[in-house]
View 1 (cartoon, rainbow, N blue to C red):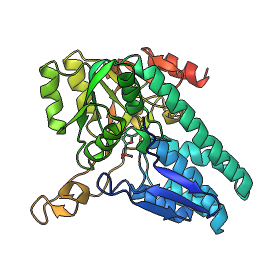
View 2: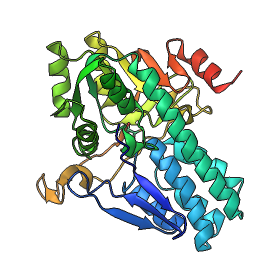
View 3: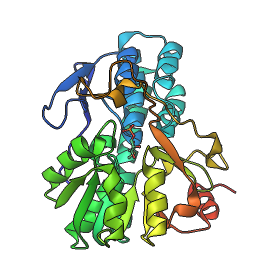
Length: 330
Ligand SMILES: CSC[C@H]1O[C@H](OP(=O)(O)O)[C@H](O)[C@@H]1O
């Protein structure tokens, strides 16, 4: 897949540039970030989003803190408070903590983390391509923009297409933030993969007509038993896929697993401003004053999963054994 990088670090300038994902696909606008405080605001505001991309950005947020003279403790606090669900953010900040007060050490750790994210995504794409065929449906955005530059679920889809296994992709628009319509469509068009945008409500209809051969989605946080949090709408897709006997996969780097959680019950599910449901590009959709609810993630029980695609291969039930083994846990 053409590498649509979500960010770049201009080391000489001390600036981490973010491709503003709120403006895509119609405008490619780069936003400079010079402090951890600005990075936390950019993550919260979804200038950059996607679990692995959030992790890399938070790591460089700590590099910027050292360059800007921010107190590491305060920088860490601000970044941890930016978004609650993607565990990659917290794993990254845990790694950076060892280098508080050390600019060179912080820079080396952030570079290493980004490099590891890229390597895991390449492996995920190769392993995932082997389980996909025909027409695949995906939800939200899990391509280069959400990751370190190669993608997870979408990386597997693009690799499977390159191998002649996948011939077409159904792209869920992914209301209300429209990551599918705006970002996945943007990436698949650049990658030259045949794809069609659908409203989220159309997925079951297409499954019932035999037009979906597999579903693959990303993960923001997975528990040790395979329960996982992902973009709102994922759970509904999982139930529909099970009803129609369609294989359902989650693709993730092991850095998206939270080893402190035996089940998904403890995963924090972010709620975002109701305005993101009530408005579209600033155009009001509902009557003035009408209330809205915006759970940005939902929890899918592991029993709905056919397989879990990781950089170490595809795991099949019982997932807790496979995940513990992949993580090197007893
Ligand atoms: C490769 S993980 C991408 C993951 O992140 C998305 O959430 P958001 O756009 O709110 O950051 C969504 O859950 C994707 O599956």
